[in-house]
Image (cartoon, rainbow, N blue to C red):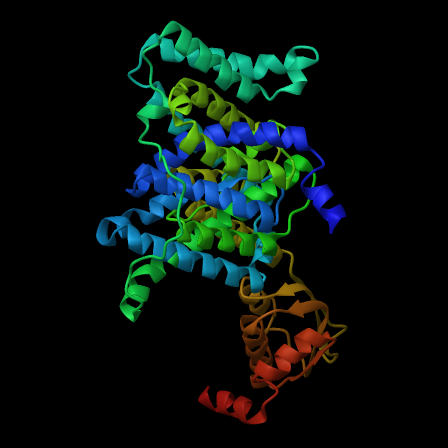
Length: 496
């Protein structure tokens, strides 16, 4: 147990503490912005971010990943808050947590293996573009000072690490925030600050239970929202975990992450916070700033609460230009630039899946819809490719010899029609042998195609033998095929 704690918590103390501080600073404006999107008080998002980050540090399945209030989740809450108010949102948040815990116990985290690399790339690219677009309001209709500060921030972020010795000892995003804040205060710049985003809370969160009637009607109101929040939250969290796995060359526990997200959301709901999930932007900031262990996630939540409650007078003076520079760095670092270079050499189907995922996310601002569209397209392309790999060879020594067919490949709904069309019923034969030694039947569509072929030959007066079935195919054919049932065959023949 102590060895496990050392490996996950205390192997990178200095890096985790500094990275957690950077993430906490970057979380403040985003949590406030997401609260505004959802139509609730800024403290709802800030309390949620603190609570989720602290809890997920202990129960999550991916060390070093940051979870908090997110824009994708906030967008799903707008209607519920508008029509029923904050208390129903808190109730929906609790139910969201319960559903996510159930998903973890049902091992639904394993479904991520069906998400192809092209979908993940599209997800990453779309998110990078959304992160960049979210900074544009801070760069629109502003004075030149804002552009100068943002450019200076990017310069610090990318050039500071090049300084010998000290450049590697401090995370450049933290240096950017501190330096630009000091410059803005010294010069008395009249530019937008964190304090302009909204009022920061001045008290610690307290335990509360949503004041909603515990009735079936309440369940009917919150269930659709809770289901949507649970799905989007898990999808974004598991996708983010996959990306952080690649960045750190480590492996996450997906089913534990599902349960952890659920526990964290229940905690958030009980402390007056909104539902949240993993944040790819903040997670990348954490990794780029040197965070690797659970301590960095815990510190992000802990520092966030300390800063907004006890150091709010200082935090309010941080110029938004500094945080915009950090988020632009995140968007640049998140975008998969190699995917653009690889468009020429990757298969067309892979490119279509990636571009479609990006397009749907940008059009809807819904990451779940983009991933769903990408997965569906990838599935269709895969099914089409496998269907084309099926071939049927036939041989016959002479007109009196048996007609021998050899089926090679996978027979399922996408290749069933091709299977049926591959048999030449114009060839005369008293006996027909269908060899399935190198084939596999997957579904009822395949069995139905085999029925049609066998019964058609029987109608022509030929005796048909089906041989070489593997155990799985034999089980499926024996259970659902009609050509083995004399009564069914007789009925079909009489109908014709």
